[in-house]
Structures are given as C-alpha cells and as structure tokens.
Image (cartoon, rainbow over all chains, first blue to last red; front, side):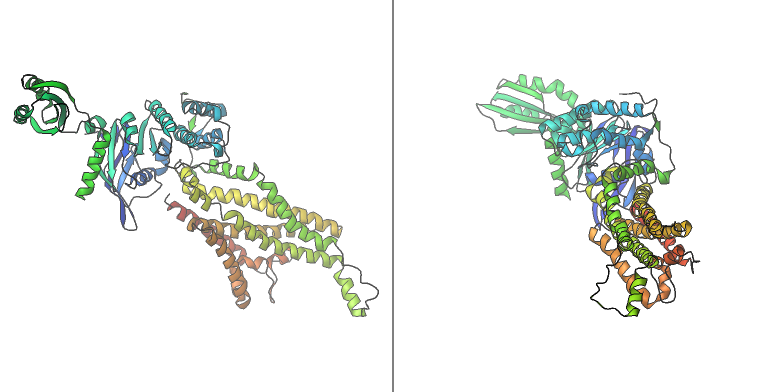
Length: 322
Length: 285
C-alpha cells in the first residue's frame, strides 16, 4: 500500500457524466512518485476525460482527485503550477515560433532575468531536439515536431508531474521513437503519467500501468506483475517423444494449477505449465521432465506474457462481464 | 538542465493569475502585427472621410439657367454656411462613430473567445496556471484598449483638427472630450456584450446576430416607449422630440438632462463582464 505522500496522483471515486452517460465511473487511481505510469485503454475508454479532470479543465460529477497533494478542483491553479500537460491534439498560436511559444509558456510560471529564462528555453529546446528549429513559426512544423514542442512546453516549468495524453498516437515510427526517447530522458527529473493505446510503447518505457475500459478501472499494477500474470506463473516446455505420461505426472503435482498441451510438429509437444508456487516449480519441474525417459527436453523457460495479451484478456473479460 | 536558482515563481493574486502574460500576448496580437494599422486606415476612411466630405466639399453652384426664388436662394446660402456644414459633419461623425464602430466591435470580438475554444488554444492556455477571470479580463483590456484608441481616440483627435481648421478656431475641448468619452462607453457596451456572448455560445452566427438584434430592438422600441431610451446606450446619440442626445448636448456645452444612461450603460458593461467570467469559469475543455 502506498503512503499518500509517495503519490503524485490519487483519485477517490472520481466520476464524470455527460448528459447522464458515465464517461468515468468511480475511478480510484494511485500514481506513485518517480514512475512512468502508462494509462491504457481503448479509444473512448475515458482516458482523456480523466486527464482533464485532473487538470481542472473539466469538473467531476462526483468524487475527488488529489494531485501533488492538492485538490484538483479547489486548488486547480496551484495544481497547474506544478504539472506539465501535453494534450492529445495540442494546439498553439500558429504565428509564434517554438521559442516564442516556450517563452510565452515560461512567463506563466516564472519571473526573473530574461537571460535566465532564455537559458531555460534553450535547455528545453535542446532536450527535445528542436534547437535548430527554434525560430521557425509553428505552422510549418511536422506532427513529430509539434509533439516534441508539446513535451517542451509541458516540461518548461520542471513540473513534479508530467501528464501526456496520447503523446505518440499520431506519429510515424520515427516520430514515436523520438517521443519515447524524450520521455526516457525525462524520467529522472519527474513523474510521467501518460495515456496511450500503443501497447508496445508502454511495455518499452512504463514501470506501472493502469487499464481503463468504458470508464472503469480494470487493473492497476507494476508492469512486471501484470506481465507475469499476477498470481500464477507459467512455464513453457517443449519436449520430443511421447508426452502423455509426463503430462499426467506434472498435472498431479500440488503446485501445478494447469497444463495446456499445444499441437506440435516433428514429434514435438509444447506445454504451458501454470504453477501457484514459483519457488517449488523452479526446483522440481526441470528434474521431473529430465528424469522422464520417454521424452527429450527441447525447450524450457518462464513464459513472459505480452502486454497486448494481458490487455486484450482484461478488456475482453471486463466487456464480457459487464 | 539549468539550475532553478535565479528564476522566481510568479506570485500573483489568484483572480488575476496569468493576467499580465495573457494581456501581453493579446496586445502583441494588436500592436506587433499589421492589425493595428489596418484598423487605423479602416476607421480613418469610415469616420474621418465621413467628416471631410460635408466639411470641405461645398455644394455645387446652381447653374444660372435654374431660376430660384428668393426663399430658395436664402435656404441654399444657409445650408452652405460654415456653421451648418460643421454641424452636419459633427452629426454624421457622431452617428458613424456610434453605429459603424458597433459593427466593427462585433466583427472583431466575435472570434476572440470562440476561436480559442474551438481551435483548442484556450484549453492549452487553461492548462497553465491561469485564472479564468484573467483570460476574460485580458481580452477585455487588450481589445477594448486597442479599439477605443484606434476607432475612437485617434479618430476624434483627427476630426477635432478638421473641425477646428474648418471653423478657423479651436473647438471647445472639454465638451468635445466628454462627447468622445460617451462614444467610448457606447463602444464598451457592445464590446462587453459580444465578449459575454462569446463565452455563452460556440456559434459565431449567434455572437454576431444577437448584438445586431439588440440594436434593432432598441431602435424599434425606444421611439414608441421613450422612457426606455435612458436604459440603453442609444440615449447617447438619439435625438427625441422632447430631448436631445447626450452627445449633442455635451458637444454644445449644455448640461446633460440626465446621467441615467451613463450609469445604466456602465452597469450593463459590468454585468456583461461578470457573466462572461462566471460562464467561462464553468467552461469545460
């Protein structure tokens, strides 16, 4: 259980309805400090609505949210002083250059010598790789450049929390790569809370994830826990030879919860062995296979689930259950 | 990254958090683009040319072939007299200042808030530490200041020069400034009304149509119910059978018969601004 001082975002039954339709239903979210928190969900799941509630851009119908220890409604302006935000489809004043946009943004946060502000702007432009385009009007920027500028303006106040709404959704692979790289560079400075439906990106940079579907939180956990399947661990075993006896023997172990046999070729059999006690399984499963004279062990390993599989099974499970 | 040593967090009262920066940006949109001189030329053509025509262009001589009675000749001479031409020019100038500027204000302001809501720049700005009241007040101060300066003050100064040159003597300055202030207040009425409508609607058509409808209703109703005139800025420029317009009274140096229209119009402006702030504070992006 997280101590509340270790949390940058904490919501309690946060709810938002539009004309009687619940866009967000009693969201209870805990985002720990210094994490890269992936906020996943299919389109229309309520991710952007939740983000707007956190920033005070919309008002909750019910419940409350605490951001960096401040109430998201009552202390909305103070929250925005300590948070950086990149919108899903960011829009700026097109006639401004990147530098002017950052100067305009910085002026909301800071007063001080102009050269110190310019130094901050130069640092930020460098960080997002826009230093060579700093004095070009934004209207000529590509999607990737706009997104990098978006991260720059969100980062200009060195926020305690950076909220990015679908930062890589509209980008080509190069643009996505650039944005993820910038996020990785920023992780040592701030907590990043970002929404996305691009699961490979999440798997690459996030340490904690939450899955939202139809306005409801389906799961929230560290990514390793989620990928490991949580309570059960699965081993992948491939053997050559007659595996019927082996299957029976493995199934009879008290620490084995299930054995799935998958169709194989060339006389090979693939099995997925789910266990409830990982330590016992690590010690006893390999000898059980090796000692079986009817089979030859070809492959053995801990099966890592793909985030996409976890995501799909959770969202489908939620949709079937609702 | 640069150490966060020299930069200080801005300390401002909550209600005007971000106001200075917003105002700077709005002023830049006026004064660091060609917008200001386009307005200057536009208002110059519309207002001071309207003054120049009756003031400097004498009526053509009547050809000898046209025979006039003595009475007609006297009327013509009187109409061409300097005093009459100045009076005509003044009346035209005041009417144009009130009505044409109204149209200009509505056209300029209809985009001011709606554009920001529809393009998403409003949501971006509001994701920064900016009070909603600052957003509205910055729009009011920057646009109000620019329009009053370009469409009223500058035009009235140039018109003053024209009137003084035509008459060969300086116009009395205090009555002239009082008249100008009333026209500026009239402009603020329409500006705050349009600003408020921009927060209430997302449709430009409504924001343009409603002020014009309000003007139309005023023009239709006040002749039938003259007592209502004092509750509208129309009292500044409308002559009634029983009383002259406030601007004409002020211009001629006579005491104003009532200050009620000034008070009521000021109250309207304040109410419009309050409603705009109240509504914008509830805007969801």
